[in-house]
Length: 124
Image 1 (spheres, one colour):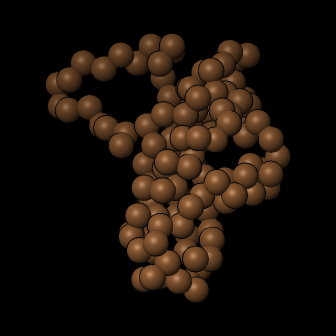
Image 2 (spheres, one colour):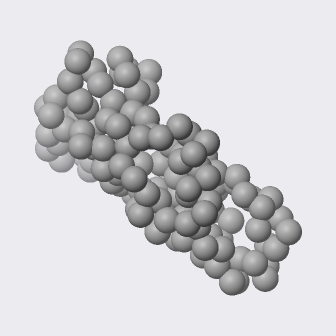
């Protein structure tokens, strides 16, 4: 989870570790392959939890995973939004952590850390 600093807490906001949102980047972070290929690979690796199949079988679900794309393309600070439960969010995180790295975003010609989201829709 991306934590907000506590009141009166010192936070290092130097350019080296600043996290940018897409609108402030010259080049946003992106997947190393085309988006549809990346999503297809994700769905191939994703294993639907048995409990989710029992409780949500035949249902179309949507969830969003937010994360930080680091300067080297690795992902960190994962957070699941709209988790339907029954282990789906946990399995989505587990699967995303096994996926290829991304290409980091750029600001003023330099690689920077950036906030990104991956929306997923699937039928169980």
